[in-house]
Amino acid sequence: MTETRRPPEVDRAAASRRAVAARRERAALKQDVAMRVITPQELLQRAWDHPESPAGAMRITEYLTALPAIGEGKRDRILAELEISPVKRLGGLGPRQRKELSRFLDGRFPPHTPRAGRSRLIVLAGPTAVGKGTVAAHIKEHHPEILLSVSATTRPPRPGEVDGEHYYFVDDVEFDRLIADGELLEWATVHNKYRYGTPKAPIEKALAEGRTVLLEIDLQGARQVRAAAPDATLVFLLPPSWDELVHRLVGRGTEDEEERARRLRTAKGELASQGEFDYLVVNDTVPRAAAAVAALAG
Figure 1 (cartoon, rainbow, N blue to C red):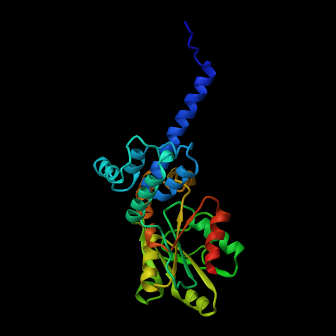
Figure 2: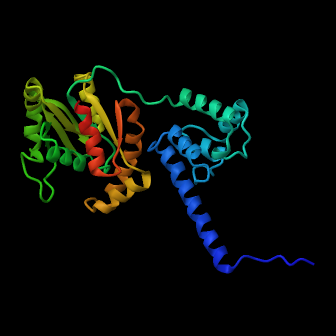
Figure 3: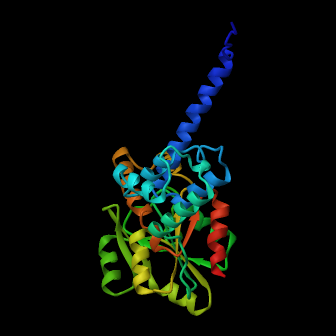
């Protein structure tokens, strides 16, 4: 009788750890798609480029139910229409199946394309804690040809912030006056707490001189700028992953637990708005993200 040999205990333990790590990575990828940190097409391309990766090993059923607004019932109808077996993994899809799935995705989640005729007014926005301020500060330091607009705010300064350099710190009475006199290009109440606004005069002067102006503002403000200046270039800053965004927010240590929870809820909604923007830039490293934004100055 042939004896069946079991693999050494150390090999089985290593295999188990790899399997757990792969499951965690697949779960993180599904979360990134669900939170709109990456597009469905991007995840699919990763699976096709590397079929043996966690993305490639993801079952088509897992993938589809991770997409926004697709439950199990809708998933099964989609698979039937595309003639794809529910046991298929993304990396193992055949040419016809890839073509049909791509067609479906592009119809339901249209690829992002920037508008034509944009101006030298660049608006940088994104979810809370994504690093907008850090990227904007890097651009200010390394691209002096780009004017970084200074916002007015009713919140108190954080340690190290200087009035007139980081923000114009004003009280509610002065902020009301700026609004009443039409001196703000946009303004918004952020996190139901403090007001932020962008003074018009420095921007208009710089644009008239032929300079590029960068506004680092929140989503509400970006929408107001789009309404007031339709040719503005809107850039949405993305985190490399949802887990990284949570880590950045918690690691910052400037907000209490209740504030962090509120900002995470806000971030989920903000990520869903990225389709309103002309360009998407991932803040995986500050220099790379800053260079990508600065390159839009043309």
